[in-house]
Image 1: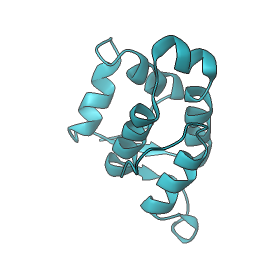
Image 2: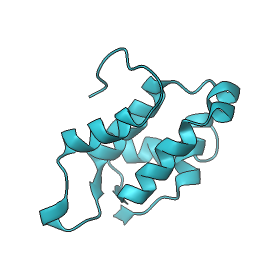
Image 3: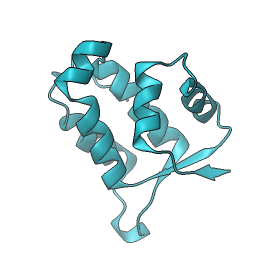
Image 4: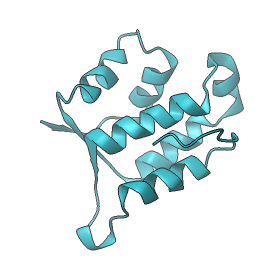
Length: 108
């Protein structure tokens, strides 16, 4: 099964992994469905998770965001024309570089 998941749902899986939407990420990681994502979705996701009010209030770390991006890249597919799709490694580099946190180690 393929699914498109709203950015707010993905953000809530980071904030409250044991909450009502935590199962979304758990089922995605288990391979129960395949997520379809786009550049605008990932841009918004990284932008929102990088907001100081969210990072500070919920203790969001670069490792948490990197883990979410890793699950998305492993269990999902980029919605674009094949000729224009960047590689998985390029996608990881793009979105990790958009975070303002210093990365202590590669997350992939």
